[in-house]
Length: 338
Image (spheres, rainbow, N blue to C red):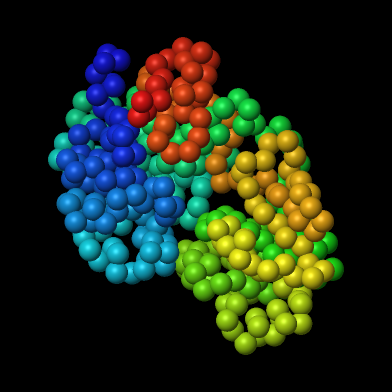
């Protein structure tokens, strides 16, 4: 039985997650006709140009398509046959069924369920937070392992979002606030601040602005957003506020500090404290869009698989997670690729 299940899924040396006979996820695999993009982060869009040329179908949620159009440019997805699939809808391909389900990670993120003609349920989680992700029942479970080590626990019980709001409000009393994070997480922060009643303008570079507009079109309420290049935004920057500026983490070395203002770096790699002061007026906030170690194990418990494959291609602790799953649940678990 275990040998049969092991033939149902794998992760290749190029990072492609293969499910059943017809589906690959998050990287290119030449022999597979159907490619799924689980979400619009670079490590899950690998080989997308090749997939668009070679695959019969490239499948994603409508929101993921819109985000890729903004992040990569609209010409990219015109290079092949892209089909969007709403959550809960099923695509029949050959003798298999493919269904996408919500994953709490970034806008449009999806879990993938493949059901084969023998009744096996093969699930790939993609990236997720357990708090607002419904675990899918699986015979074979392929899962992320970003925080798959027992050292990657967030034991603190403080509400990190409340701490974020409090820190921003305190910072605005002194001057502008600069926030650095990644696409998806930045927009989540805007949503949190807007919901909490932080009504100052949110200023951002062009690409962050366009990603934010996509998020608004798909139902997120982000507040008053404006491009850095706009006249009013330029005036606010010159006059030093009040405003909150949002930048991609990759630009933090190029963005100058604002006198009197504070900087907040949002990172999932903080496990000792929800908020750490790294230097004067500089903070790291532990707001992650991935499950910690306990959250990953909880997904396995709820899913009830007979075999688990942990993702050993993307960053994380796949070997450690597989070992812990074997020890705790007494089921087969392996980190792939080897």
